[in-house]
Image (cartoon, rainbow, N blue to C red):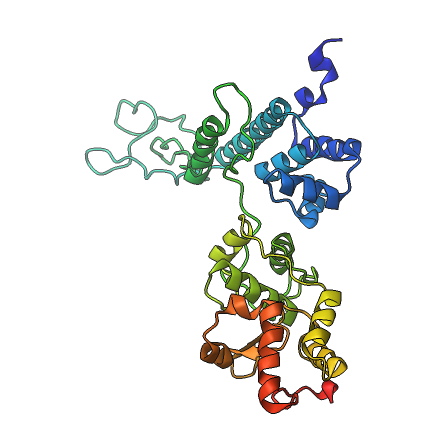
Length: 376
């Protein structure tokens, strides 16, 4: 048996068969979706578990970059990854060709019959030679339009085929771009370059609003949350853009040097897919020990206050009704940060927040500067 017979990839002809083979690759790898996500991330690819599950659960042709991420995470060799990509592009081209012929095979509409030709004297021209006396021929057949026998009808102009729309320009551009990027992503040795850029496949944000903001719900928000988690921020991945998602998004924007808006546009999504990671912060245990050390006069009260204000979460950001924000463990406001001359990244540092809280306490001798019902 030759290699082609043993290799099922050589016999794949449809998108459904292609996805079925990808499911088999995932199954034979023995990896869970989460493990594949971690392996893909380590290799420089972005592949959230939900995206992977969606791809393997459908029978439509998946995005090229998603295919590459899965194969790399499952340990596929670069040469085999290239073959998978070539097969996918062939299927995509075949699908495009089929759409083209379906468009061209649309039913045509005939043009209306031409008006009867007129003789030089204005009388209708006869269909056939005239009789000797100039009358119409005696054996004239009834007209095709149901006119009485003997009615003279001129020749009917042939139906003109309807002009169909050409194959969409967009599809030609897709194929041209595929060819160009195929050259760019394949090195001189014929091996797919690691971390190759995606082709013309749409990004996960295609079809999403231009700006994601609090109150929205759906797969676009789910994608945003997955990117936040991949960026080092714990947030519920539930598809609901609530206060927790807003808080985490603001933290990412602060660390990434982006405008701190709490909303996600294309630039934010691109940055979330990049190399920017939020540094890990302190654990609750470490925070509790440090707060007790800094506040020996009332260690329990200090910890209780911090828990009430932020849940002992150094990356907690709260937005007030007037749009102002409070930052970090002890929730210092924008105005306080400005007065103290510190930036937002500093405000998210638990060591700084605890020290600043101690400074406030040293002036008053109590925690009256803060207002938190649970702390009383």
